Image (cartoon, rainbow, N blue to C red; front, side, top):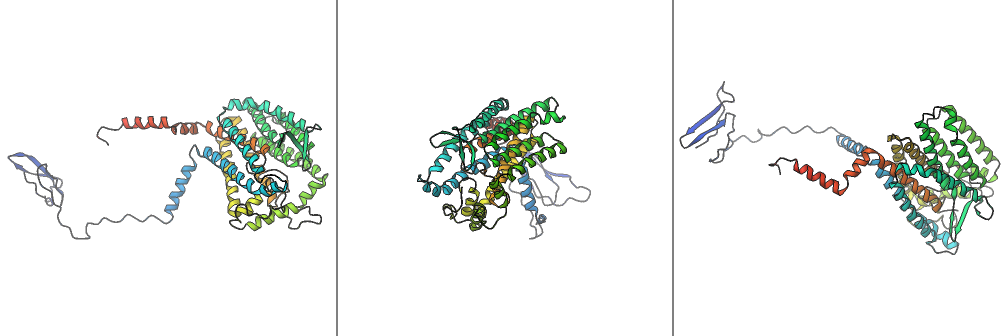
Length: 477
C-alpha cells in the first residue's frame, strides 16, 4: 500500500480522514493536516514538504526579567532554610567549627605563654584538646538522652553545683586565680571552676520548674513566677560574688532574665528584677577599685596614668594590626608578653591579629548561626521544658559571647569571661558542650526533623526506593 502526503483539505472538510484502499492490505488513513502524513507499517519514509528557510522558526521564549536569577536563588535558599533539619545542622556544624578553630587559636596564642612558664609550647593546647575530647563525649551523650532524663538530671546537677560552690569558700580547698577565689584543685595540673556548672544547673532546674508550673497554669501569678526561681538564682549569685567573680555573676543574671522573659514575665515584674540587679551591681562595682578601673577603660585609647587600661588598649592594637586577612597563624606580636591572657579572655584579639577582619567576622557569623538555631528550636517546640531550656542555653552562649567580644572591642568593661567554645579553659568548655548537646537533642525531638532523619537512614531509603520502583507501570523504564 502506498501512502502519499496529503495536501491541504478543501474547504468544509477540515479534519476529515482521506483513505486510499488497496486489495492486498487494510485501509490506511492519513490525517488531513497540511504538510503532515502518518508513516505506514510497510511503507517508506514520509517526506515533509520543503519550507522556505526562516519561515518555520518558532518565536524565541521571552527573556526573563532582570533579577529573575537572584529571585530564584533567594527562593531556593529560603526553601533550604525552612527545612526541618536546618536548626539541627546549624547547631552541630557551627559548634564544631567554633571548637576546632578555638583549638587552633589556643595553640597559636598560648605557645609564648607556655614558654614563659618553662613549659612545653603545646602544654595549654594538649589540656584544651583533652577537654574538647571529653566534651565531645558529653555532647554525644546529651544529644542522645531523652527529654525526661534531662529533666530528671536537673535537681542532682543543681545540688552538686551548689555543694562544689560552697567548697570553694572553704580555706584549703578553694583556690584564688587573678584575685577571684572560684577554683578547686583536682590534683596535678587540673582544676575545676564550679560556677561554670552552676550556669547549666540553673538552666535545667529553672526550665523544669517553670514547665511544671506552666502545666498547672500557675505562671499567671507573680509569686509562682518568682518563687523559688529568683531566690535560688540569688543564692548562686551570692556564692559566686563571695569569690569576687563579677563576670560569671553577669552571665548568671542574664540567664535568669532570659528564663523570666520566656516565662512571660510582665514588664513591671521584669523591670523590677532588673532594677534590683542593677542596683546591686552598681554597689558592687562602686565599692571595688579594680572594677571601677575596668569600667573607666571602656573605649580607652590611652594606657592610663598607672597602666590600668593596658589590656584593653593592647587588645585594640591587636585587632587594628590584623588588617583584612591578618598577619598569619602564629605571627601575632601582641602575644609576646604585650597582651595579658592572650589564650583565655582576649583570644578574640589574637584571632583578629592573625586572621584579620575576615577571621573575626567568620567567628561572629558562627555564633550568630548558633544563636539563631537555638532561638528556632525554642520557638518551634510545643514542649515548655524544651522551650525554656533551649532559650536558656541560647541566652547563656550569646550573652557570654557578647560580653567577651564587647570587652575586646572596648565597648564593654572587661568582665573576665571566656569566649564560649573558643577560649582556653576546660571548666568552661565541658558544660558548654553538654549544653550544645542539649540543643541538638531538642532539635532532633521535632517531629518533622525526626521523620527527616529517619528517611536519611540507608535501610529506610533503600526500602523506600524499592517500594517506589514497584509502583511504576510495567512499560516504564
